[in-house]
Length: 200
Image 1 (cartoon, rainbow, N blue to C red):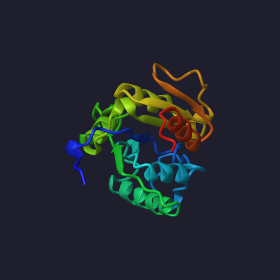
Image 2: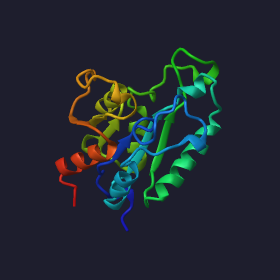
Image 3: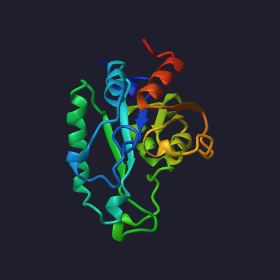
Image 4: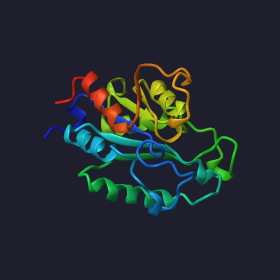
């Protein structure tokens, strides 16, 4: 088996968490409240079967704001893993930003490079998983998600779940290389796979 170091970088899919993969619950911190959005499990399983890395990239300013401890993130992601396993699906890497530029105190109150729309989480994951950002997709329910994808060099897709249900479709800032706007994450993934010729 070839090691990452000798393989060409591959396409990956970056998914926002709240409102894209799981139902938006304001500052979610209770694992029992984790609820998959329809199509998410099947879409992630399809990407897994195609050996396309799947990365969750999520802003979690509730940590900076003191709404819940950072340790709660692992509990929520563990529950998400359980729900995805029912679809034979898995997340290859979780990235979260606990910071906020103006709220909170201490180390969490910083103007970081990882809070979307900045691309830090995507860039870190791409380096760790040998992902070619220019071949990759970022899916989210907010303009900031699409802008993070654009800032990393990815294609992007808006979903009409979560905040996407109320974001005017044209009002998505300077995001470039848009695949389109879709009802659900599964629709966005299917469209991107077809466009990239990966829908085998």
